Amino acid sequence: MRNIFAILFLLISFLGYSCQVKDKFELKVGFIPFILFTSYIFLVALAARLSLMLVTIIIVNLIGLLLFVKFLYNNKEILGSLFPEYFLFFISIGILSFYLYGRKFLMYDDFSHWATISRLLLRKDAINTGLDTTISFKSYPQAMAYFIYGIGRFFQFDESILMIINSIFTLSGLFCFISLTKNKVINYILTVLVIIYGFYYNIRPYCLLVDTILSTTGFAIFSFVYYYDFRKENNYLKYFLMPMFVSLVYVKNSGLFLSIFVLIYIIKKYMRKDYKIIIISLGSIFLSNLSWSNHIKNEFSYTGKHSMSISQYKSGIATNHDLINGFTREFLSRVFNDYLMWALISILIILLIYKKFDKLIISLLFSTICIYVIYQIGNYFMFISSMTPGELRRLACYDRYVRTIHMFLTLIVIYVLNFNYDDYLTKILSFLILIFSIFIMPKSEEIGFNNNEFRYQLEEEKNKNKIPREKKILIKFKEKDFSRIYTRASMYVFESNEITDTFPGDEKQFNKNDYDYFIDLSK
Image (cartoon, rainbow, N blue to C red; front, side, top):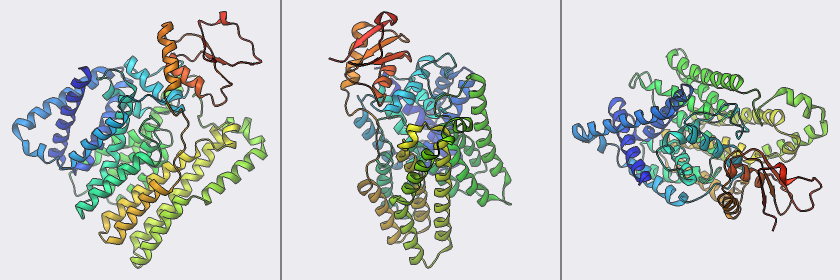
């Protein structure tokens, strides 16, 4: 009953704000969900610093409900103007909900951070502090945890609901594609294919990893800036850039890279025309990044795992020349054998010839190559300044990092081409690059369990022994946990970072009496 009430309450609030934004700013419907969601993240982030998270989301959604009532009685036409676009949006949410409902987290990174931080906020109604020992990656920004909190707090806790909420935000970025006005039927089909691509090419919807969200958020901001001329449209539209950029920077540290790429386009578009737009964008990026950095420095004595650190590089990796040389060779090999980028560049070259060296395509081709090269340079230095030697040797998570820039560039290229051209070759090539990405490119790598069996084992032990949070537990697995995923899953389920793992034949000896609980899963 609580979940049904939450759905109705949040849906009505969302429609109320949608009507208000549509009426006030005359926005294209495709941009409205993304604008509302990033604004919501911005408000929750502010409320988190003021320790007012719960009261803020209640008040904000009550106002949305009142707005809906106002438009329902006074201006039904505005509500009707949200459709048919919102039909596609809600149908997509319905399909995602049907696909995800009842699932449990199975991915390593959910256990190690993303699901852990979201659950913590939902339980505390506050952001984590130095006393919350279950959070290892303390320097990771938390935009999606804020969004999940802002929606999920109204529901009874369920892991699959967190997945659905995360996916709805991803959808809002992809939904900006529907703002294309030329050849509406084909663009609707293109939008559907883009949505499928967005949920398949990199991160699947059944986890909370944010790499796809980086791409879709960066693209959504770019498409908003590309579509509107803020000097000619409603003068207040440019202020939506503030929550957009704050949200992107707060998604993940590498969101700063994509923010800068979009900022460069804004500078190019508005230099000597409207400095206020540039100042708003630059200020939002700089201040949000500074604010988060200061929060980490002031709140925690250390930044946690995987923080970029020159001192870490100098103390260990820099002295291992064989490691650096081997990593560099493998990294360059992957860059030069990047089939998706070669396909994207080939499509632009074909159109360049077909359009008789149109300046727009020249600019798009040049920008695509430059952004990819700059991103990969940053990616390289991120690896050597934040990864362990073992992670460097296997280029840990390289696949999803590079697919982040793949998706960002692919979405922008397709959007710009279809915004400016309406010929069949442009449409065909747009469909081909998406089909190539979905069906021809290798499936993105996933680090996690294939099924729920181990999760059920842990939860059965937790319920049987009535184990409370933050207890010291010794767990005996069937074999050595080389990947650490069994240990991480145990830390997540038992909500404790004091989990010690062992296995039959372990040379280390542990005294069960030194622990609050001993769990034997080796049989």
